[in-house]
Image 1 (cartoon, rainbow, N blue to C red):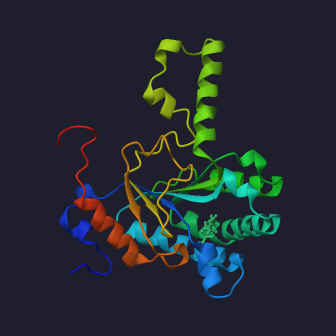
Image 2: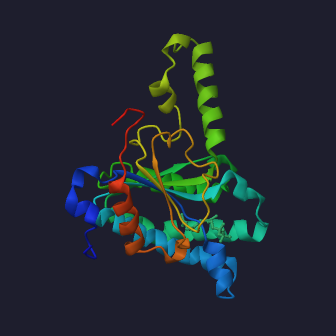
Amino acid sequence: MISANKSKAQTQNPEVLPQHVAVIMDGNGRWAKARGLPRTAGHKKGADALRRMLDNCSKSGIHYLTVYAFSSENWKRPSDEISDLMQLLQHYLHQELEILHEKKVCLRFIGDLSRLDLEIREQIAYAIKLTEKNRDFHLTIALSYGSRQEIVGAAKKLAKKVLDGSIKFEQIDEELFSGNLDTAGLPELDLLIRTGGEKRLSNFLLWQSAYTEFYFSDTLWPDFDESDLIAALDDFVKRERRYGTTG
Ligand code: FPP
């Protein structure tokens, strides 16, 4: 029987637990629609689910959580929804920053932040600076993020370094390439969870998920709770990760 605080995964073998989990937090809009509420209400509940997820990951011994909060394609949503999401993010940072800092969470953002309003960028810069030395937990928020753009960006950075002579063309390998992505320094991504029933990556962490295990949950993100995380972890530990070998 899986206890509330410890998944089967954890009690069986702590070694096989994922170290780095990413989440595509999908289903906020449908959650709200099912209740006759505006989509923003779903996003608000989504922010609550993120708070819960961080604590539940921490309890389960996971130290790296990367979440998809706003994709580069989400800029095409109605302007009202975009501004509601940005306000929610500001509110989240305002309300949570001290708590996250007390929990020794290191906050990091990936994506094209230049598209965000100056006020949010300043708030983000402050949050990064305040928490940069924290080591108990690493929360990475993908904001205005698109993986293809990130990969093109890394290629451009490397091309520039070759042109200015700071690296040689022959030095370019997977490690150097990874080190020029937004996620540089983060450990390998072990498990990617997508909620809300869809089964696609939606331009999230394409390079980073080369050997990642995927878990698709029908639960809408605002409802995703500890039992859903435990189910994902128990599924994860059953997988045989061969990395292309015969095992
Ligand atoms: C996808 O659901 C979700 C988003 C585009 C936004 C995710 C944002 C949050 C969970 C808010 C909290 C985040 C932070 C960092 C405070 P959807 O709107 O596409 O849902 P649908 O597929 O049901 O329409």
